[in-house]
Image (cartoon, rainbow, N blue to C red; front, top):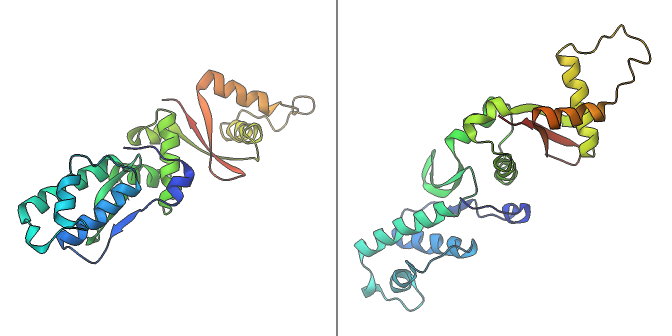
Length: 212
């Protein structure tokens, strides 16, 4: 798996080929995608040039060589798939090849109610989870919900207050000064003591996770 910047993910070639199973077509499209992603092609490049290069001839075609070359290219594209994604045919269309969210991550995200329709945004989020040491099978325990705020401090304070309310830690009958809680400080306690952290989703919304 390979890590990508948000800009790279925004222009990522999620769909590599559609509407053909012809090996010669797939070789060209796989090759173009691998080059676009900066994949290392030294082990397969001579065969590609021989089979479908600019100077290749029809008489140069070899079915066995082409099949092996296509398998190698598939492995290379798998190696450069974003974290949490895999390369192959679409589950619903065997002639559509591209990069798809893995079954493990799809199930984990769905279980936590996280939208994964946008592959670029999903890949960026999974990379952030990976930065926090969270794998797909750990997401259920690590994911704590969302928080709102235009800064990390605001979002942390928002989540600390929401959590305190959810667990019944706030006595609504108490009067001032007990109602004057420093929720930013409360969030810092959650960060330091319980391993909570924030992952930005949009300019004003965040995902909340904790170490597991």
